[in-house]
Amino acid sequence: MHTEIRPVKTHQRKRHQHAIIRWLVALTTGLMLTSGTLAAPQIDSALASELDTTSSPATQKPILRIAIADVLQEPLQNEIDMLRRAFNYAGYHLQLVPLPAQRGLRNAAAGELDGEFLRRREDITAYSSLLAIDEPLRHVELWVWMLADSQCPNTQQDLHKFTMATVLSYGFIKTIPASSGSKKFQTNSVVSSLRVLQAGRVDYVMFDKRGMAHYKDTLGLDVKTCFEQPLSSINYFSFMHSKHRDKLPALTVALHRVKNEQSTNNNP
Image (cartoon, rainbow, N blue to C red; front, top):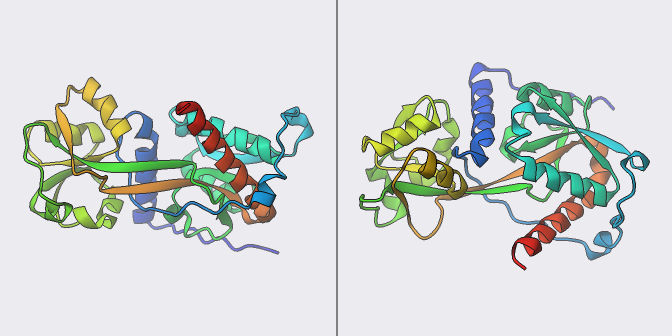
């Protein structure tokens, strides 16, 4: 059956999608991310028991070719390793195909490749042929950061009284309710946004803790988080073409298992 693909081709959507990829690339080197919380799937114990627990040679397993934005290979090595292990547990060999971000997405949606490495659910709404492996591959929390000598707002609802720095074309910032009323100072890069904060020209930025740790060192930032919880969080998923719909339950359970193993290793 032919699946009609209807990618949105407006200049505004392309710019929005490219901005998301730039943001994701910078995750491990200190760029900002977006929002959206999704519930963890329920794991079928019967299905879990059927997962392949042996490590047979890759040549004995079916190969699934997944598109990955070429700029993501180095910064997201941990996520790549996790997905490889999950595919192996589920009985498949993962082969990543580096491509420009939008070309890879289109090829995956058209079925020329078997899937797409990492996207938000919101990023693929125009591509109904792509289905998520229903276990987040990456979870990111966004915190409000201010200069260390600044006074934090009393509540998140008071953020509209403060100014924030953000990167030009990162329109998805508007989807975060608590910050939507803030006056925004737009820059052409994340480093520029942080420099604007450092100079005291804005009150706050939104950043993940992993990214800010990097820039506190490289830029000499003296900043602090406000509030006892993040302003927002977002989940990123891997996607498979709908022709592989039958593989999704096993891949979901396998990825859940890999994440549990990693959590156990990190917290013995």
